[in-house]
Image 1 (cartoon, rainbow, N blue to C red):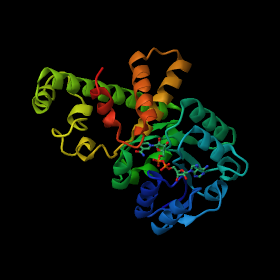
Image 2: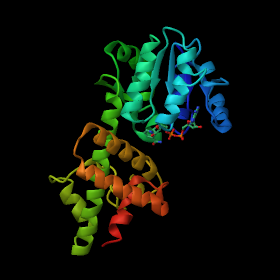
Image 3: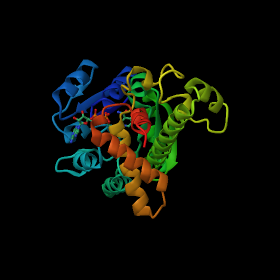
Amino acid sequence: MAEIGFIGAGNMGGPMLANLIKAGHSVTVFDLVQAALDAAKGAGAAIAGSPGDAAARRAAVITMLPAGAQVRDVYTGDGGVLARAAEDTLLIDCSTIDVTTAREVSEAAAARGLEMVDAPVSGGVAGAVAGALTFMVGGAESAFARAEPILQPMAKAVVHAGPSGNGQTAKICNNMMLAAAMIVTSEAFALADRLGLERQTMFDIVSSATGQCWALTSYCPVPGPVPASPANRDYQPGFTAAMMNKDLKLAQQAAEAAGAATPVGAEAARLYDEFCAAGNESLDFSAIFKLINAGR
Ligand code: NAD
């Protein structure tokens, strides 16, 4: 079993590190927030006083941070992970961040002779608690082979997406598709309502017709047809509109940099931004139905 440094013990990182401890690893945690450290200690972790202390003398370092700025700072800052990690430490960033930062930090790690993967996740807090996340991993074959067994206790699936940055690319492409599907599913229910088609009837027909999609059959944005969906509990998350908004912005930033046309993705980003600006950030992202259903 390995000595692992874990930086960023928030809503996702907390349960993820608890699953590593349950699997028999020794985990040393750093976070800026005392409550996160207290919870990690309660789960059996040791506590470090800085990112560098969490990284020193570990087989692997895992980060689960809000965005690219924090990832860059924790790895490349003075006395940070790159400055203190041993030669054979594997670096695994599980945060969802922009592709450019992911590749630049990985290059900085390589310049120090360290292997690094980007390994963002899908599955949300419920998946983190259950040890059932999907990890989308970008990095060299050799780094993936080392990361896979470490990620396994937190995972339902660990998929190699290709070289550095490709994990982040897979994540933002997936979420751009999901956002667009959620919006158009909401539009279909709003239109069907106004034309007098019962929601349950619409659901029954479309779920076995060509409009079928995960946003409809697993995460239906109207109450009723899918009992487990957040629509049945006043849109408590789940996956917040704020998180979706962040991922859509990352997708648009990447599309612009790559010269890719994403007109529907751009409109999805605009709609989620409007929805969040109206004070709905903490609702589940399927609550976009409320904005759509408000009508023209
Ligand atoms: P969170 O805000 O709950 O946790 C982030 C943690 O990082 C906090 O405890 C914070 O104190 C800590 N932190 C911030 N800056 C730090 C620093 N410089 N040094 C050390 N610790 C620092 O966020 P979360 O929901 O756990 O999400 C983490 C990442 O996972 C994000 O990139 C998010 O996009 C991604 N993600 C979240 C979900 C979800 O459903 N919550 C799902 C998939 C992916």
